[in-house]
Every structure is written in C-alpha cells, then in structure tokens.
Length: 118
Image (cartoon, rainbow, N blue to C red):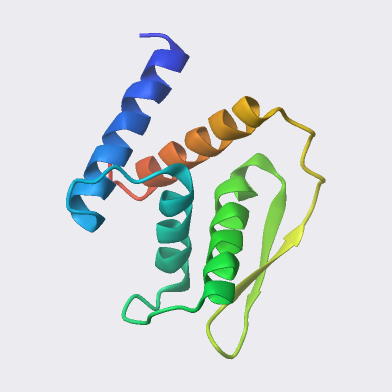
C-alpha cells in the first residue's frame, strides 16, 4: 500500500471512530477533529467552552499536532492549566489542499502515537 493510500485509510478510520464516539455517527470534519484534540490536550473534558476558548483549543491542537514537524515547541502550562507553545519556524505557504494533507497526516500520527488507531 502506498503512503497516500495508507494515510487515506487511516484518516477514514480516525474520522469513523471519532464520529461514532462523539457525533452519533454524523461525520466530523477536520475542524471538529482539531477541536477535539485541543480539548484532549487541555485535559478539561467536563467543561463547556465559549467561542473564544474554542479557537484557543484549536490553536493548542494545531501546535501539538505540528510540534513533531519542528514548527512549535511546548513552553509551559499556565495556572489555569492551558498549555502554551512557542513557534520555532514559520509555517510554509501551502495551498489549501496541501494544508489539509499536512493536518490529516499530523492527526493520523497523533492518534497512532496515542494508540487510538493501529
């Protein structure tokens, strides 16, 4: 199986599992999955979040997801439990499709490392 086929199969598995677990089978999109990762990384699963916090959660997720690619470093956790990251390298200018592939690959790798998928 080629790398692209493997990524596609793993992405489909991630979407299916998360959609079944969190959306009663309605298919989650990329942004919703990034949001869920942000909530997971914050570790405050019982909270409900306002709109501005939802954007912050997505930022946490993106930093966490792109850390292995060398774009961010973990810095510290503040007194409210929110992780903070430092940008190491500016993200390259990517076309929308290339951004999507990068994020899907990073998400698949995240869920492989957390043993959510095989």
